[in-house]
Length: 164
Image (cartoon, rainbow, N blue to C red; front, side, top):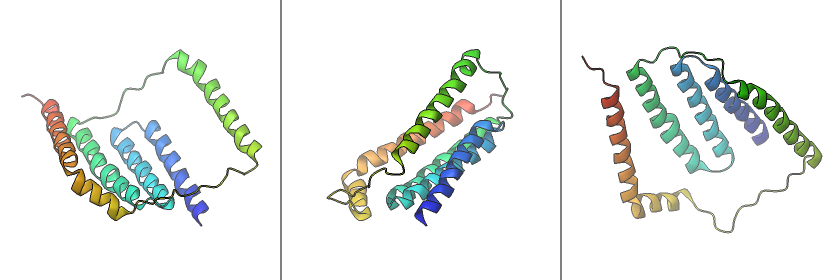
């Protein structure tokens, strides 16, 4: 069951990333990035990292992507200009990607499906331990980071404001 879910959401993640790159409209790209971040949250959940999965959904899929879509809508970004790319990217990119795919295929097929076993460490940190450290011992850096993000948002709005 875990393997099937891992494959399904891994495919969602890769498809969302490819869609992110191939979209012409920035809003559609931002929505594809939300698919990628949500798929990563499910992958974290399958790996047993519940706090990381929740943080992925709350911070990235929620707050950061809302900020991205807000800024894109505020800037009124339309379709982007398409360029033909550099000749060097076509000359080196395709053979490089084919070589990387060949090396990865060779490594995976030569191992015969034996990739070892993953083991947990001796000390397992629970979500309550992590939240206690984050919200008690590291409260000041946590709040300073939120204030810096707020200042960055205000700066982006001030720079994007149209002069009449």
